[in-house]
Length: 258
Image 1 (cartoon, rainbow, N blue to C red):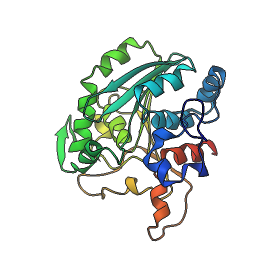
Image 2 (image 1 turned 135 degrees about the horizontal axis):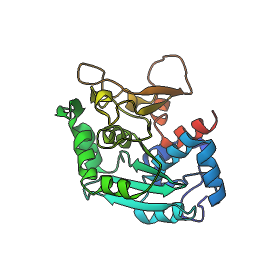
Image 3 (image 1 turned 180 degrees about the vertical axis):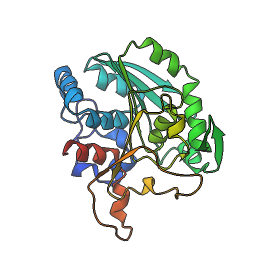
């Protein structure tokens, strides 16, 4: 059933092909109906809220403003014109920088993902597509916006491709924490190059999320940060349900249940 803002209620815990492929069609911050509830959830369920920021990053600018504006959140929207999108949300003297992930229907996103050869950047070795996508967005004035936000704490987050961009963004700006969902391997020697390099980087992995395994580990690709596994189950043969573990909506559902 469609909600008042045109999005659908979350069904089956977000474990459907449609929820996986089209998160923008489903309601983010599910169950939050007031500014008070929004602010209380941030204080008490930070990582669940960051999963929802990663979800809403898939919306278009108008829908983001409509949804978050109802909670008294100030928004700056970034679009590099070639598929890269991000939002900067400011509230309670906090800022959240959220990056949009891969949309299977967007050819530009798939081209970014396929640029798996590496390049050197600030002492790290990075996936070329992820590195270029990050640089393209930061050229839009994100750092200037962060410096003007007057937030005491700034967080970076994202899902899938957006998770990779959030991590690399830590090489541009010192965040309070980087919290990602369904993050692929991004490169090597990244932790050492993060601003402040002791930054708190938490990387959520939902079940057997295939995207987190899609780029094989090797001399040019390692995982970084503190891994937090959701819905842990024994190793098994790959099944079709494993693809649904990548749904950002299911990430949020499972984090809320912790």
